[in-house]
Image 1 (spheres, rainbow, N blue to C red):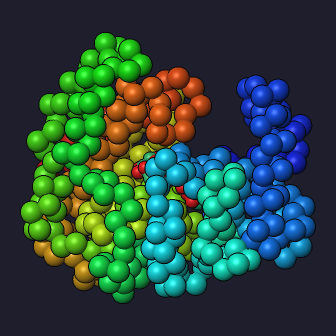
Image 2: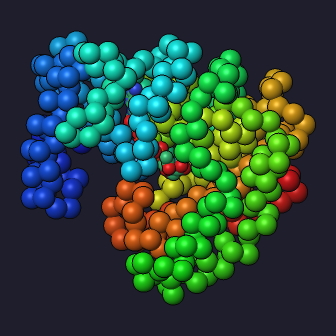
Length: 368
Ligand code: ADP
Ligand code: GN1
Ligand code: MG
């Protein structure tokens, strides 16, 4: 499994990883200086190491090494999260229930730091932990299912009305189709003509893909506290024992349906390759992982209504579909939302999601 750590204090190591070292080196000197100042405002004036963790499409994440130990410092993407202080209030409510993950406040007691370089927050660094980009055994798939069941049990102790809706309409299919249609109309990057097949697949699939989102909007699926970004790489496991530690990336915790979370778990945990695998031949949906995950999540789970349980498989299809739609929308818009490393990155991601939806239909068709 790949590691996503680049030391900012070791340009030689970065050299192996970055295509354009000259530009990266300039970026490094600015960032290192910024990070030291920000860390100071959290009370850490003796930073001995800074490493960029490159997993994640939205925020910028660093591990900082200090005399008091290691910490996670994140620059929050304020184009996406426009009210970071309110988002941090949500996270504060949730982390009260998660002893493994603590917010480190600024020296003057704030949940995040808003200064000249942006908005930053800090957490304890969870040592000996690992997150995966894809699963390689039934055992891990079952563990992932159990992990989400236990996380949902923890969230069920929180009153949904106490949370701010950080990103309204996040999984609202009608809203995502409106964004898609706007991107098609504008065709800002001039890419529309090159992705006709993908556009057709998504357009034709609108009705079925909207089932869960419509049931939720109609109040037929209960509103609960949900994570909304339960992809595999947002879960930390113990590097030595493989045991689940905690979900991280709590930015999108807000009211939703549990099916948004089971869906993203299935999307990422039953794919046999990374989300951005460049060889489509390697992208497959694993029925075996799906069954293991399903046992892990559903066995002994008394939270779900019969309707929720019956839509478990459909949730995977729905969230995989919505991600195809969102990646393709961003591709059409010229890659303005997700971090990308090359010009076709969002297209590769979108195509992989489409392939997974097609394979789900082949192997799970009857489970809906
Ligand atoms: P993003 O919002 O950009 O996805 P994440 O919060 O998911 O950022 O963090 C990115 C990566 O950083 C994670 O996949 C994980 O590897 C690592 N990470 C984040 N928080 C912690 C933590 N508290 N302890 C250890 N590693 C962490
Ligand atoms: C983003 O932050 P990250 O990388 O965990 C996105 C999710 C997508 C995911 C796809 C706020 O999550 O919705 O499912 O990428 N987060 C936001 O990998 O848009
Ligand atoms: Mg993440």
